[in-house]
Length: 326
Image (tube, rainbow, N blue to C red; front, side, top):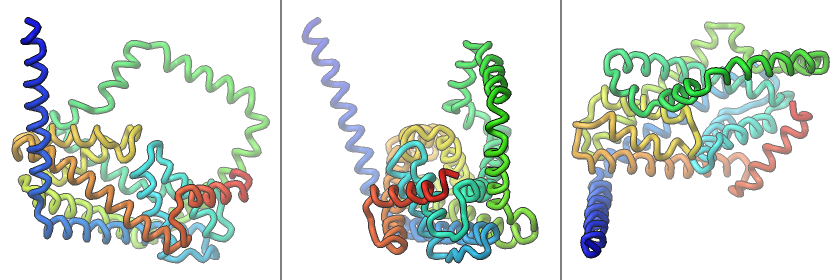
């Protein structure tokens, strides 16, 4: 019995070690040509996102003097920081960098512009997830964040009404003091969404570039599938994008690491051996993370002439302080 208790874990660990080695061997089999092509498409995607940012903020602050290089650097730099840190620290840094680079801007206005910038991608992600839930319900039924949250609220049925009542009471008591500040913030927030005053301009200068960037994102995922020898179809690329959208709903780890990899293996089951699917999920994440960090470093250096994260975050925080935290 004692010998069996020792031997069995050793055998299990031996199998696990061989499986891990097999996964990394699969990663080593990647087709470099297709991998480079996928990353080139990621670069173009990043540039189009930078163009959309520039146009949103130029509409909000016509005299702000924002250039494409600055818009691209701040947005890609934020993406790079998000890849390394949890809790969307890169998004906060990006808002601060925009605030320090645009004359007459405010934190509330730039934050509002960030909402404008995200609307197109949010709408597309919601549509894709809904369509996937209809036509392939197994894809989103297992591993979805709603499983955990739904179970929690079911176990605490009085929590939501109690929280709502508490919030309403606090707002009622504090409203006389909050009202002037809220009205001021609302005016600044509306300025950040100024491009919505002209829907044709929004479609022409923002949505069109975002649509192109999204198409390039799907194309990049397609060529990642080719590079890692997983069945490459537009459908599978869209499934990979669905996984990315769902995993970022709970950004407790940088880039949704862990959740994304496990979910990718699940939804692409049957498209390749499990070791190859895991090699794709891990390899694609590592490649994109390294690429985003490298591209973000180049962009930030072009903008600030420094790569010290503490200094970058310090400048962003200083910009918020200059605006009085508004």
